[in-house]
Length: 240
Image 1 (cartoon, helix red, strand yellow):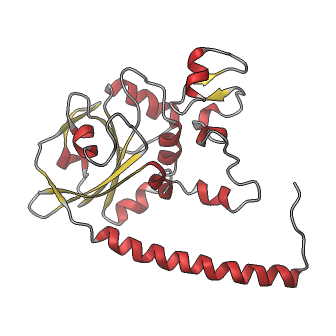
Image 2 (cartoon, rainbow, N blue to C red; image 1 turned 60 degrees about the vertical axis):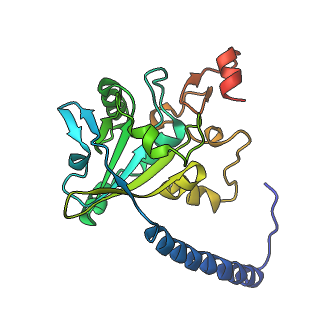
Image 3 (cartoon, rainbow, N blue to C red; image 1 turned 90 degrees about the vertical axis):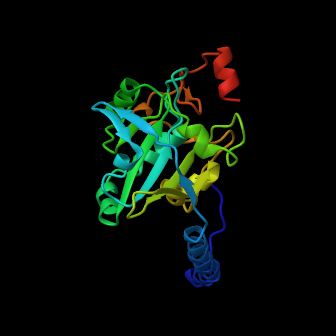
């Protein structure tokens, strides 16, 4: 790997110049955070009822006694039960964070329009312990995404909700696609190391569901595994 090599004095000068830009970006992010918190809210009036292994879960119950709820809309369906690589990478980052979030009046939960049994198998495989409920049979995912995510698209997606003292629930903020990278800290580790992301197709050039590392072959964005040189039509279409 060829790269300019300079004296420590020259490196310190270059580093100082870059630090000015990095600090400006941090201040801009602080200002953006204030604007994100000031975004107008939408009242959620539909009485959504989700499902977990113990039975029905109301939207209010999903808050777990907190006033703030961060939801990751997990990309998985009854028709395609392989796990989204991007969703898996993001949700993995909650390991060790759940207690910190709870201490700050935030519950983190995942929601997916798929059978509870599929969700439980996924949680067991990934050793996840956050609330993860099924929205199958409800219009929740479609309603929350309406007008924000293009029809037919299903990118990584996060939403924030607030429940006030009177029990009213509001949608306060959402993001999708690359906006969700803010909740996966591995990007920053990789971005500041010399090789960077090394992406030609995208995320699956360097990431896959955690238990699937070391198997060789390739993984499609939806998590479907393809052994080396499988040559199948699905492989060609999903890895293009």
